[in-house]
Image (cartoon, rainbow, N blue to C red; front, side, top):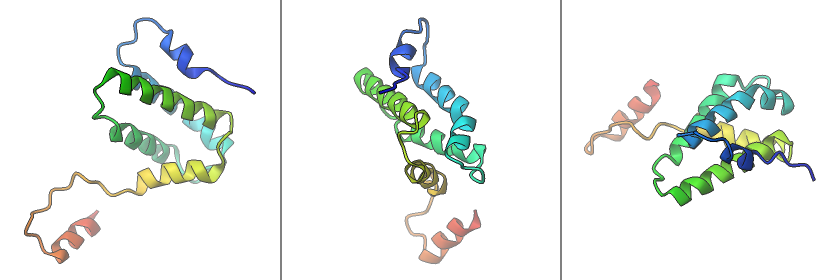
Length: 125
């Protein structure tokens, strides 16, 4: 079975201060290749980048070094599976589209806002 050993190679690079940023840059670097491999012609590079960024922001609260190491390992594993085409097209599409289409949770709504006001704010975007 073929492997790329991305995690072990990345951990051996000396002097890297921000390993999650290194993984993010590596993922963004591979976006054009992944879009071609999985035939995502209409998806767009910017949409894929936004999807990946949202995956990183979901885990941004992790502070424990062991958890960060585990998340990095998992991230490199997912990237390796994607590059080696061990994922099917619909798996990758579900991951990326769910992140891009997800509404922002950082909106400020008043506690006493009516349902019509909330709906108007969501539809304004």
